[in-house]
Length: 140
Ligand code: 5GP
Ligand code: ZN
Image 1 (cartoon, rainbow, N blue to C red):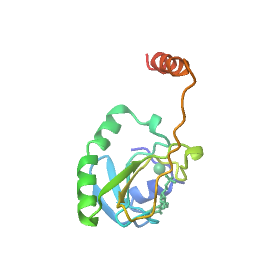
Image 2: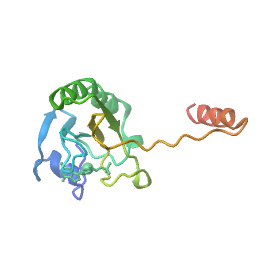
Image 3: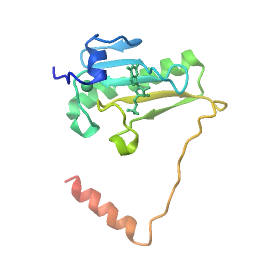
């Protein structure tokens, strides 16, 4: 299994540094974030080192993602949350500080004050269709 000796999450996977682990199987580890945005804030990581989401083989992604319904059910129940955000920061420009791919599971409640920055824009006339075609072609 590939690991990066300089990676803090690889060290957590290997048990070289402590973490409050809540779940693991052959390929996936979930543990509590050391700086939680809310109680129960979890991180979910593949045990192998992949820096970014697009580095993950699809079967590893599927094996990890299948756990999300259970994780969300458990963490929202024990924290009495009303919902949660599943968040992945991909690359530094998007807020990724630890370059080992990880999902945040963040319990939310109406009174948590966290808010959500979401600033919708609009496509200029015809631009949506151009972007649609570009993405469709890139997926071929
Ligand atoms: P990112 O900004 O890369 O999406 O999120 C990195 C997250 O990892 C942060 O929320 C931060 O609190 C958490 N984190 C960083 N170092 C450690 C650590 O050593 N242990 C744990 N449990 N969480 C960490
Ligand atoms: Zn790593």
